[in-house]
Length: 92
Image 1 (cartoon, helix red, strand yellow):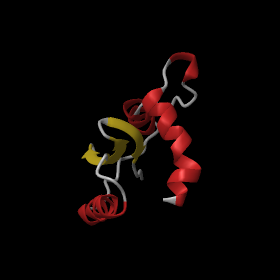
Image 2: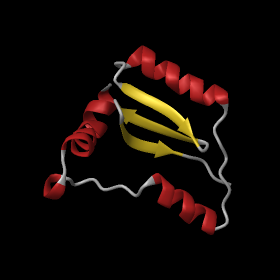
Image 3: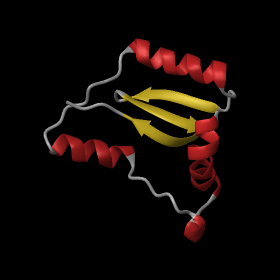
Image 4: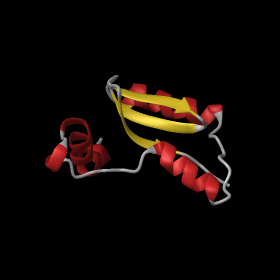
């Protein structure tokens, strides 16, 4: 929770609530990142079901139920309600 407060809170507010000139954080879309990695010769290496379930369990037990985690194309989409905040993926 301390990491959330100290490191993520500003980013979460900026991504979820701000647009236009107020929006500071502009991350690259996951699809563009996937295309760039593939063109560079990397292959996606999906996380195991155990990793996915461990993260999902931690979110449910340690944080409020407004956080979401979904798995798509082997990547983990972490978000606040229906807004994706961060996408995690592994590549070989």
